Length: 108
Image (cartoon, rainbow, N blue to C red; front, side, top):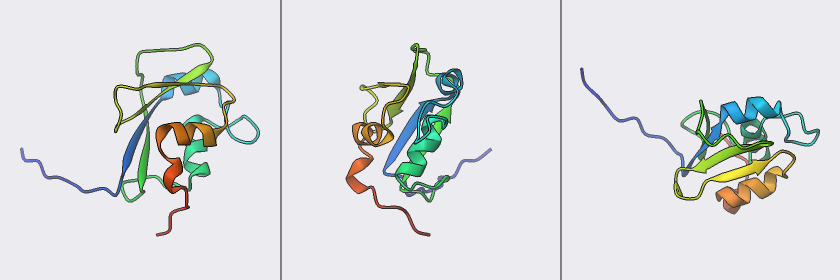
């Protein structure tokens, strides 16, 4: 068995709890019907995959399980977890995660 590294263009790795998101059944975006991970990707022009400038990854469960909120972690600041309440503006969440500094859409 061997291992080999694969490079990515990510400046940030954002972990979003999928279990929390599922419990809220959306809660974000213009109509409040979009999950947090998808709403963040759309608001900041991020694509899926390793060629994106930031990775927004839904993980199984982060173990906090807040009521009416989603647990989010920025890999660059693993000591400061966020509990994002349903209906919080996505732009505000992105700025708290450090995505707001370079909010131009990506091009391939």
